[in-house]
Length: 61
Image 1 (spheres, rainbow, N blue to C red):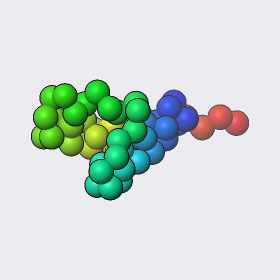
Image 2: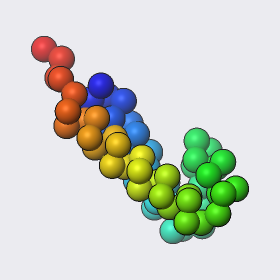
Image 3: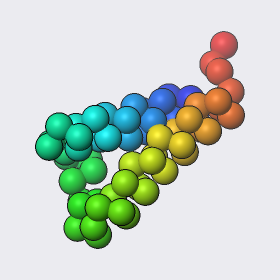
Image 4: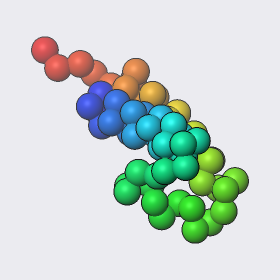
C-alpha cells in the first residue's frame, strides 16, 4: 500500500510541476479534456490520496 501511495503522490506532484512548465505526463494526459479546474482537482486529489495511502499503509518487515 505504501508503494502505490508513494507512486500516486509522486506522479501527482510531477504532473503539477510539468503542467506549470507547459508539459504533461502521459498518465495524466487525459485529464485536460475536462477543463483546467477538473484537471487541477484530479492532480491535487492524486497527491492527497497518495499521501493518505502512504501514511496509512503498513510497512513491510
